[in-house]
Amino acid sequence: MSYDTFLGAYSTGPDCYERIGDITGAYGRKAVIIGGKTALSKAEPEIRKCASASGIEITGTLWYGGDATYSNAKRLEESPEVQSADMVFAVGGGRAVDTCKVVSDNAKKPLFTFPTLASNCAAVTAIAVIYKDDGSLEGYFYPERCPVHSFINTKVIADSPRDMFWAGIGDALSKEYEVLLASRGEKLTHTPLMGAALSRSCTEPLIDCGAEALRQCERGEAGAELQEVVLDIIISTGIVSNMTNKYGEYYYNSSLAHAFYNGSTVIDAARRHLHGEIVSFGVLVLLTYDGQIEERDRIIRFNKSIGLPVTLAEMDIRDEDLKAIADKAETVLEWEKVPYKMSKERFIEVIRETSRAGEAMDMEKEAV
Ligand SMILES: [Zn+2]
Image (tube, rainbow, N blue to C red):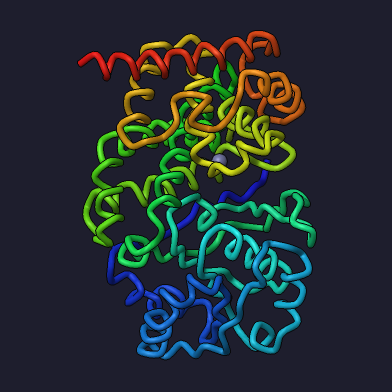
């Protein structure tokens, strides 16, 4: 069987933009910068400075359009700045980078990413989440390959909103548990087998360094713990995603934590919470459903230590919402990514049980 695997290469550290010339130079001499407005205000001057120092010409800087849509991608593809460039530099969070995946894939120009937030792994993955012009979900776009290289400047990310980083920790927390549950009992071929092994490196750095990394982010400091957690959120989870998910062949990339998240999207009050915040509670649901109670309690303690939710009330979800959540959850792909047959009744009961365990941990703390 013949196939390609692309993983995701990266440079990191406060001075990593100095590597732009050496690394992108092999792919061309002209680049277009595309990004979000805030992201560009933080990263563009330094990218331009380092690019020009190494003889890379910037054909122009374009705003990506505010949402990851095919119409924004088309407008960008048709611009002279993109057409005259050899390569695309995507600057920003998930949506800007995802838009650029469509642009670079259609225009057949190599993509380099400059994440300015550590809230997801979009900077290194070969998948883009695309929205319709009205803001509703259009679906996934699968580019030919993942971005060629990612420049993860910890100084820029230390300057990003603390809550986005916090929610990024909650989302990354799902990777190891979801991949191991989704792939359990499966005969894995080489690439997903490696991906499942790598997923085991996703949880511990979050637990060891998460609280200190958040404090560093609050102070705008590119410290060692912040770097560990940023690389966990962007690189570890991103490479695992590239190795555990091949369109049309296999999907071990997510499971019950995201089934819970997807279910929660039908509840208005829950939608006001960040994706990773809800997912971190979904991790507790997964562990409870799977009977990993000791590990569940360890993660409850971690979530509490950095203010991620451990009860339904913290996500503004009421007991009467659980049926609607389960009705939606059972319709999504992640619902079936378990090694057993799911029961909707048990799922609802497990959510209640998880929240009760979170409340009980509250009382324990108060009793101390
Ligand atoms: Zn997620």
